[in-house]
Length: 394
Image (tube, rainbow, N blue to C red; front, side):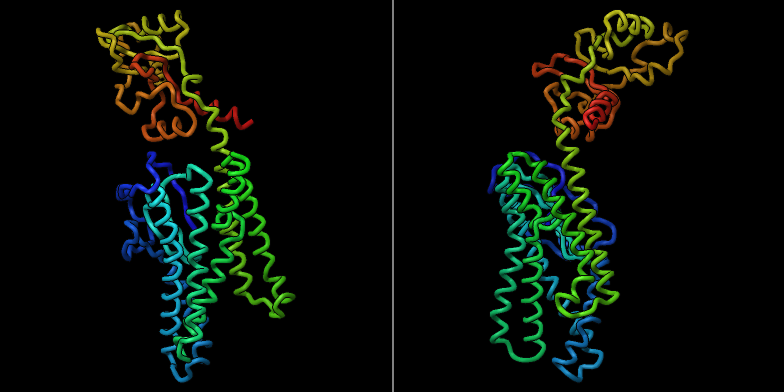
């Protein structure tokens, strides 16, 4: 599975992306190397699952190779390592295709449910979404087919047992990952198909998210159905595993649906439409006079400028309201103005996700909006952006 993050800058497909800046390693993970320029991490939960696999598979190993004693658990652990190496191939294929399409990949993490590839950015076209998603299951199926072919020529014993187990596990992983529901790769394949047909990426995500929820429900019911299908009564482990996997699927699909609905509303946020009328004043002007002029001009924002008209500060509304009226004649407006750092100067043309990202990079209560020629357009208040977004939710 792959996990998209914040969009990177535009790149030409096929151009090798720059390695993303180093980010703190997630807690509870160990770096074991790198693939395609991306860190390979192993979560602490993997060791628990590897031990569980070793214990569960030990009886089968004992049947294949009697007399191993405690070494059967070592052989089981070795099988778990080989199995997760094939999972690593699955995730590496996601990473390689994503990088070929111009998306930085920060890490590949192996965890108790398999693996995850952290890709920075969302696909720009349905084709990119499809290629990045489908290559993982196809890799697993390919590994399964190759291992299945080797099974016929492998010597009897542990080697043949391992090759057979690798074939069956990879074929199962490949097929199950094609189930059309997010967060499975098949969900992203479905998303790309709906996106291509409807032209709406958010609709594609919602449809695939509901596919994930349906899949979660079926997984939760599986222990109750397996006896009718296979004639094997469910055990406590079957119920626990089905619950954990269903919870994982339901959580991932629900997060995707929520994110899609939020992103669908973002285009309604246009900086130019949300700007407040702005008054420019010298920074040494008495605060009371600045407020009087702003009220007279019906301005919702005050910007301090140099003698040459260059903006240097933006008045903080909360700081202004905190100053008692009787003190305002004796204080310069610069006292309640914040210096206009580069991050507080935004193009008036920003909208949607670009606007939200620009605000999140430099959190503040007010921003100065500038035209392309550098002239002042207005003041953007974060409170107004929040209010507009909440209004769009109704």
